[in-house]
Length: 219
Image 1: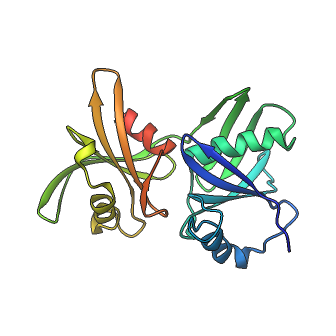
Image 2 (image 1 turned 90 degrees about the horizontal axis):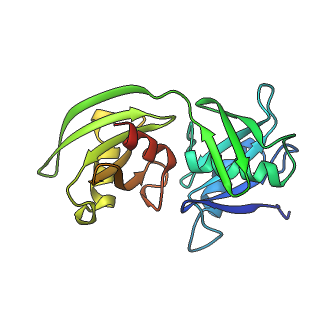
């Protein structure tokens, strides 16, 4: 069966979006489907898949899956892509909309090439977490901006082995059982940050992470 899809990128995070309001993929088959189509060497390739579903409390609902088939409560750049998709496909009556996610209802607004979303209130702030990993001592702040994020400051993030260090922190018992996304942050002057992110569910560094940028900026 042919399945219609759209491939979209938000600041380098890329997603496969499928209109599933009239089901084309059963829930029981989604995990296997996601793992196969997100494979960059054997299929389309993406950081995740967004299934657009009907909602009883918002304009539309999304069912979001990471590349590895796990679900995520929220994804900032995914939300922006979905909002743009909904407008282009005439799924919503106006350029302002609400989206139902596992993290709660979020607002979105599309104006031309500009797409904004309003995330849920940040929660679960923890600061100055001491963590030892492979002989390195880390001082970590943590904040949930829809999904959990660990923030680690570095003088030069280009020297960080993001995949190795991020993997160890993401699966560390401190953040069990759900794990965490991991952001390595470098201050650039008084008003700018450079950020590299290891994303939970992708299990690798990604080109961008919307909720990670927000968590880093807040902390």
